Length: 576
Image (tube, rainbow, N blue to C red; front, side):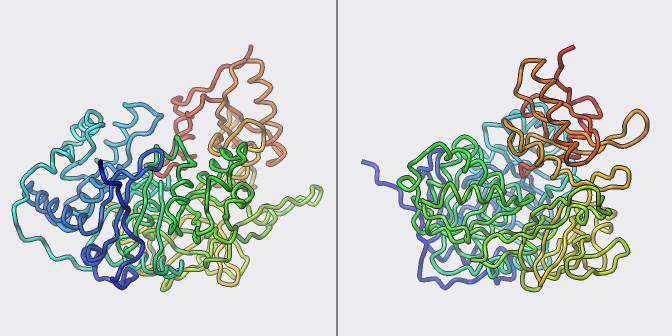
């Protein structure tokens, strides 16, 4: 009879060091002295693989020697398809030991098709110019096609792991060396890679763990993809650098069975840390709404930090999650909003644990910077408090003139500190555009109040029509309130009409087959958008799963607009 697997422990005799190492190599070495590690689960949340940090280090050092034997040298880029599992973790850390820069790239999604994935992968490979691409055997055809297009070697990591690992000297790492290359999820600079140094990484991991008040015996559960900063940095590299055991569900498993995420938190009694963008909480609340066994099935009472970031935080969704899972012991104060971006490694601000979600109601006209029409009633939007800056991080709100603004004055968010990126890889112009005198122009809009940061939207997404500014999130949210729509079904942006004027355009996933019903639906959407913007808009119904996503799963408005204008997104036909 096979002995049941035992997950790595939450506690051990090794004193915790909160990421205070000179290099990530040192962090791996120290974590390997503990009995903690990574634990991989199947689609139903059952434990499949236990991977202690000691074993990870041993495998990583062997991978580093294989990389050196294959001709990979210091500062070479090595592209890795970021499948959640021991193979990727060992190769990522192996690259770090070898002095190469690991570059996590996404797996194919369930939509978009084979050719689109090859095109996307080829573009990213061209950008990072890797010496090698590693991938799981299941996607060998697509990965090899993309690698061949770029002219780099493509290798199945199972095959690579069978190669000899001859002893050799590995380079010494320094804090200023580049540790890895991360693609930003922002559509404004994609596909430019963010170069992150060891020093920046460890500073952010220290600041994040300190802001979260990371204590002993903590445990993390995650389904987030490892090619995005929240999944890679927040739920893998942070666990290694802070000596925390982690439990993983693959992203596609979460997509099929989202409640398995909460099952894992319940089953692993020490689970206190888990993170998700808003849509993760949303889908769980929707799935459980028709069930009555919440208290019997789940135990979320130990969930101390329910992190939320990566997109605009929606208080209504968070309240729905609380309503759905309070009987299972979930506490609203566990919600920990944050703000960050890959250009600052991960986090810029974090809400102090236990303060929960705090919102301020702000007039929409003040958000958009336009005078309010006194003939119309004031409209308000709930803006979420995203917390305070990490230790040694500074945040300023600046106006168009570059001057810092006072509390409750909306402007561009700028950040400064050791976590700020080194550069955009091989893109001096983009680097100079956003790094000014050591300050990072985040491209986001927000305001400060009593030391807390409130984010109101991305500057690049602003829709400006007849001198009035509109946030696309507001338009999208309005359409989402209509029956039958989910978060992510709508993309709003500005287009130029035949008469040369700008108008808001809204692309909407349509699941209705009757052409007459489609006309009725389009009119309903137009009326809803008109109630928000005060003007007519172009509404196009498109097939489900048509709207493009960024690598982190967020809606890409810029790409949706580009595909629509080029004719690659074809609207559905309506009745004559």
